[in-house]
Amino acid sequence: MTNKLFVAGLSYSATDSALEQHFSQFGKVLSAKVIMDKYTGQGKGFGFVEMSTPEEAKITMDKLNNTQFLERTLVVKEAKPQENRTGGFQRGNDNKQNRW
Image (cartoon, rainbow, N blue to C red; front, side):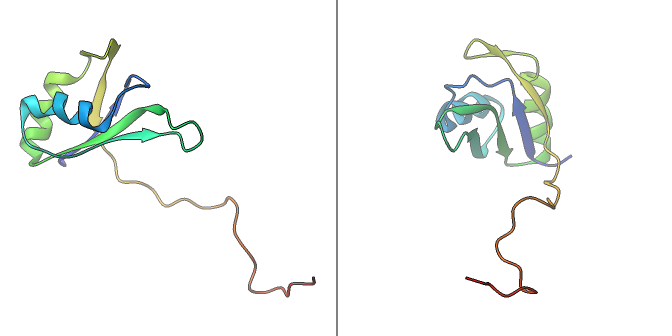
């Protein structure tokens, strides 16, 4: 188990500080981040919390999963490492010359 948790089911109005305060009931929170939509500035409904130890993360996950926070039901799981992304838009191509 790692000390980083994935949190889903967040209210769209949730803030980093509210998330940190809620999770700090069960241990020391190193970081709490609500993922925001870059266009609207509104929360996307999920985020990440990093606890100080894997043991605190496990206790927090067990205590807060499927509980109410800001009138929504939380899903708290162990965060998985982010996978490398491929594809999508890439700027330029070193093998071709610009023709304009």
